[in-house]
Image (cartoon, rainbow, N blue to C red; front, side):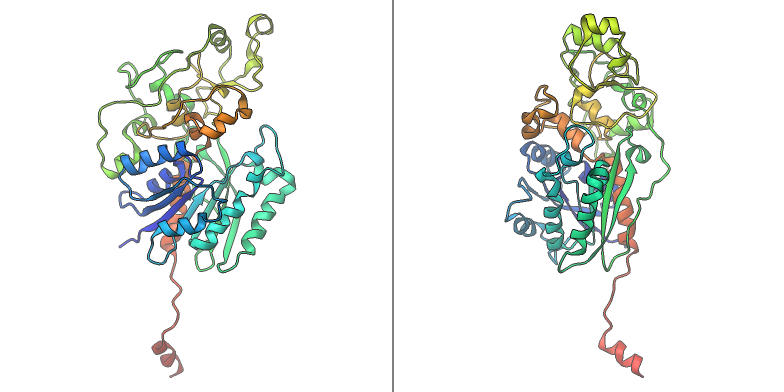
Length: 413
């Protein structure tokens, strides 16, 4: 009989990593969620709405800052396993200090959040832990951050881990319709098999059109709380998104055909005209110069129209980074989530957006609106691939047994 394993999700946000680990657990629910944590209240609302109220899991959610002095004690108090430990800890400490986009700040306090993550690892002593981050982490400051992470793990007291990383992964190889690159650090406890790569199963590489075409009936200013009969699902990705992958695994029937988070933006005529002149797969520079100078100029530095026949670029927290390949508007939050491989059954709570201002919009960071929750998330299908590799390692581990007195006497004779 297969064993079940416990896990904790830190910096969990809306729950992309949680969703993926549960997907990897399959119909037997091989992974049991014990606790999740995030500092943002709207992340807590979305996460608990999904995994507690909708799916019925009993787990603890800590709406707390991992840097708080009592965080580890509180987490240990709610994990509630027989030995006080868990099998797996996952999480992606916020990555803004490492991003290749925007300002980079070596003294950004978020750059050292991994140290607080490791403080949790020392306490919970998981068999494996996974840290996910942006590729820029491996490149910034001449590799100094990577060396710091390896050094911190090597110097951990009370428990020893073999650390592998940075391990590069591309979400499109795991069935996510997005060319999202990330790096992983995987810690294997000294009594467990080392995990040094993520197994990639052969999957279809989905394009933006294949992911979104059944939702593309909305024009700017329109909203719709249900699927449109003129746009049925035409491929497995759309059908699985509608049915709900976890719903399918657990035999949950989806009620009706309601659709959340699918509200188109209310663009001005000038914005719609600007988007209409952009070529698929191109940015503002595809707009004829005369029209740009006369009517369509914008102060926004980066914006691209999706190429319908390729996976999307990396989904960000800024909804106006992408223009729909067919409609002259940005993507709805539901379409944003589709590109991240969230099921349509996964509802995002909180405000849809918090206005413009680019990455300098502090309200976006503080309130964590829907687009930010989605853009910050680990794509569930990528997380499923990561967790499937860890599950195989857990299943293959041979417990190290201390010899009993009887065995020692037998060896002597």
